[in-house]
Length: 602
Image (cartoon, rainbow, N blue to C red; front, side, top):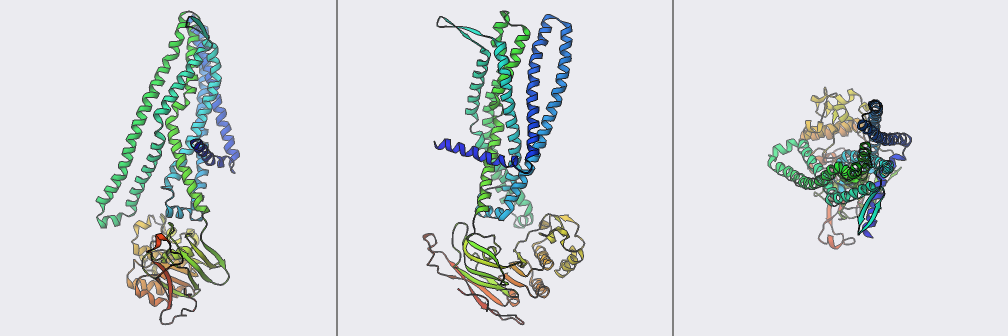
């Protein structure tokens, strides 16, 4: 019962993957194309029936040496062949059109769901699905291609079976057998031979090819892991070169490729066994109908045309019954892709539905209010005691503490991308907030697009971009705004951090969070950028995570993460863990706008 329930669940999962497109806004176009493709597929079956009749008439004309009938059959074959070619061409063409439309729609849907509500971020945090890029790019292609080709192939096989089984039944006639001294007559004996032959072949192929689905599933994952490793080296080429890490990278890549090689050998062994069975099955099927039909032909019960028609009809029936055998490899690849997509779809839905334990809302107070926020890791480990604090417009706050105490995690919770924890955060309504991580993101494209990100490239004037490039000590980039490049590889870490400050000055946020955003800069450049931001954004709140003491002079308030016991929520797994709280204190600074009157203590 457990296995049966699991199988039903699998097919329900397949239906959930396939159904949405056919009930979407494109449903009428999709259904129209599908009906046309099905009609063409049925038309090809009808033409095969006509070719079967032609086989009988053509070989009868040859046997009787009837030249006039021979000529008529040649003309008949010509127009049937031209019609068949046209139908076959447009069946493939329209199937491909339907496939790319379906894949395009699915790709948009999966990208939207993956990017919505930071699902991509949460999946990476929890590692609930590997290689989402491969699943969107490759598995969706295999889903659409496999679903159409396999379903249309199955439909053609069923219709072919229905169309030709009657022909084979009528032309094969009865077969008399002597069993136990008694004569038994088997009507339409070729039909029973075809069913038995295909049934035995299908069971044999299924038994041999069972491991192929799991092997294909692993192969797709191993291939994606290997590609990801290659991309990582390309993206971090300078760091690898400076570390002289080529040997280690080679070892890791070789290990990943070894998985591909070992699994591929398993696929080869399974495929070889499968090919032995299917090739023997297919080759013997060519002679089999003539072998069993020969006695009636040599006895004069049927003509040469009748024998050829039996051979043709038997081939069609046997081929229709052998759909499972012929499509087994494609089925294995399709099923592996469906399994991976079903897992990815479930991971995305779980990430999107995951309710944040930290409630983030908007207020009209004009300040960020952090109320009893407890920070946890995805595995449930508690980082902090409940934190309560306020960030008011115009305040400059320095955040410091040991690595791993929750400083960056607090920023993530304020940004509403960290659901692990409890408490609430209120953000000023309509306030422009910008977060600068230590390692920024630069999209591949023109420098103008990289600077404006995530706004469109037309959001800022070239004059403003060049002005702030000058002020952020990047004058050498002023004439490269229209140059496309992979800027995360082209620019040094220090240049990337300075470019991030160009974004700050262009977008002019009211609240700015800097998470080690100047860690790659020298002291003089760091001072210049802080002074520039304070001058250009005099009323903005600035909250900085930094380890350099020199940065303190640009702030009024110090939030220090300090360890404290957390007896009230301590668990057995956390019996020796360290938990942190914020200790706020004023910083002495010339011209400071305030002290710690707005920072709460725990």
